[in-house]
Length: 87
Image (tube, rainbow, N blue to C red; front, top):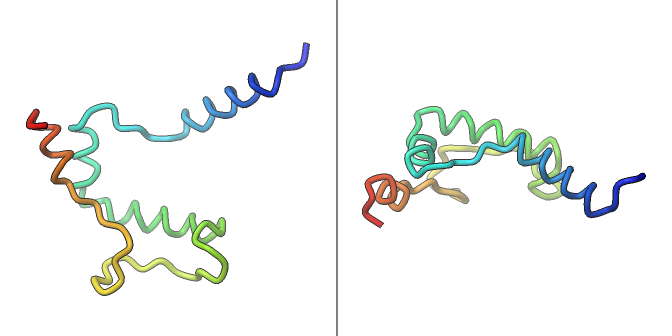
């Protein structure tokens, strides 16, 4: 019997989640946002976004480290508080 649209959607969602990194604890999230590898990771995300047209028509480049053009920040304040049990 063919799967219903609902069953196919659930299977698609599970496949997407299996390829997505989730942070299961505040300590995991804190390690990510304070990692020295974060700029490299974000460069990869930016390059992927450009290749797949996720940043809009005409977007040609993603620049990290330009303090005059900040669009996204990773502020560890609250995740640090959560990791320390202070929330």
